[in-house]
Image (cartoon, rainbow, N blue to C red; front, side, top):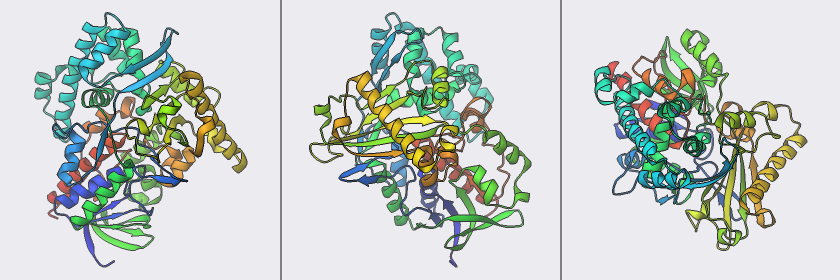
Length: 513
């Protein structure tokens, strides 16, 4: 306990692991503390019977091939972290209805040209507009990469000269950009599928945010680790130790300590830690509400927290199933199937918030399609994911809570049978249901909102990124993770952890430490 650390990272979730590794690679003395007895947060695994389940990861974008690595694979290589990746075969299958009410059952491939070709198949005559659209996506991606590399200090003259369409679209939501371009409505309906990965409908989601996620999936394909996301977390922890970093499990941060207005340490359930800087993978509402002196919280942070606290993003609900038949025997051919009542994301968002009676949105994944050896021989496994609102889970008794969880599970299992013709119910050997309160309990996130705050309207990703050049008002402390500038998702969390670590090291250098 007498050891002094340059950086203390609180929370060994994706952003915390990435931040700790970046600081250690840069030669800093790093301590990572985690209240659980395992690293990873969402990026972990758990067992039921003979099955080891993946709790949260659907697929990772921005990995790329070993020969042409994308940002996340390159980041892991820079950290010295080795992970065995498995490539996902297709973008998605969506079973829903077009906005005109006609049935939709569409499967889309990876690869920009492949995607355009398939869109032409489903929406004849769409090719010219889709080619124009992908040109815009490429320019937007390049411009966003430039802004990100500038750490919030992008040169406006460069943006005007090289990325003018980024500026033209930067203030608008996805739906308005699509309408301005004159994209066929059915193309928009199909491309709306990924909205659930961000938890914000197309009328409020910033075009730049959606563009980055969409293009990283389509152009670079998607991957999963061979041994659940726990493989990634374990590999990152092992590398941190190789670099001389320390990690303490079963250690809960309780209070951030200050010398005047400068952070100087952390009081934990294991004692007090002395450090120069803290990167906290904790929702800011918890930091400001429970973990630091109220007089040191700047007024703007109070107002920002109050405004954002009204806009927590998706509250997650997941059903995990271990099946005593193979995927082939069950007729499961797709890795990822989206189910929705309509491709109108605004209406679907309202349906989700309406609770059980109107919420028919779910995503079903079968892990064995990508990794046949992920479950014992003769079996398969998968999970359903949906979203919910706080109110429907708030006032349930213990008995009603269990019944409500199981009621949702039966509904989504029936959805898979009725809409895709896949009946798994007779073959369920293990089943486990996680509600928003499950995620709140294990991850410490308010109301089970694992995505943090909604990245929408005034609080969209671009607005957050453009504020990075301003000084963070609490000396020696920066929140990181899903509530940070990059928003939600595995890839975003890894990037955010590294980004905030860079800013912390910059602060320390300017202070001469």
